[in-house]
Image 1 (cartoon, rainbow, N blue to C red):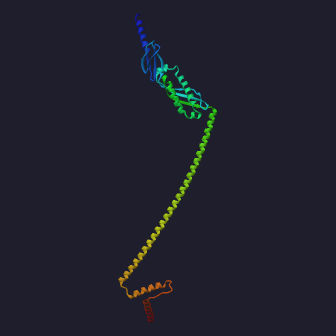
Image 2 (image 1 turned 180 degrees about the horizontal axis):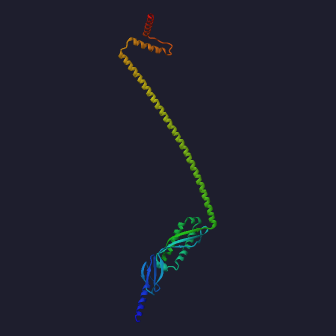
Length: 308
């Protein structure tokens, strides 16, 4: 049975080795103390802990964390008490400072946030407080980040979650907002009616202009049509006169070429005299040669009757 002791020693040694193995997960850090004093900080990976001598003093999460603090009563510059709750986004950057810098980091951040918020709001009036959230958030974040730096904490963001003024002030604000909305509605309605009237007037003016332009174009087209008709009539009359003159000239030419006798010429003179006598003239002058012709014609007519 002598072998039991060596086997027990080996088993005990293996158990101690296994118990000394530590695996640090992602986004975690272990603060290690040796004999009660800070030794080192373990990052992600496999580590060995010396039994009895070393111990894990604190496990720190390196993820960004959110702390939602309850509403805090604050007083504005114009003596209005409001309830404001804040949300703080922070991240641990130094595990050693976080483990040994302050006893309760979250409670410290909450108290620091409350006092900082009271100091900032105390310098602002109610209206400015309600419209300056971004400015207040930036100021609180800057002050908290500087104050928590010795604790190994970085403040990423600070948000004012709710701002609750007293009920009577909230009711007055709602009435004021309602009156402002009604005023804006009346202004918008008046501006709409004004714009509508302007558009109607512009439409009438444009329609009148278009009507005048149409009448002008119609008159121009009518004048151009009348002008074109007159030109065409004048061209037709001129062409007719030209053709008549050409026909007369052609007939004269033919007569001249035919060498007409005195009887033909006498006949033409009689035709001309007939046309003259058909007019409205009260006095007709007969050429002497035409009188002789007329006498000759009468003589011939009488001799013809005697023979019959």
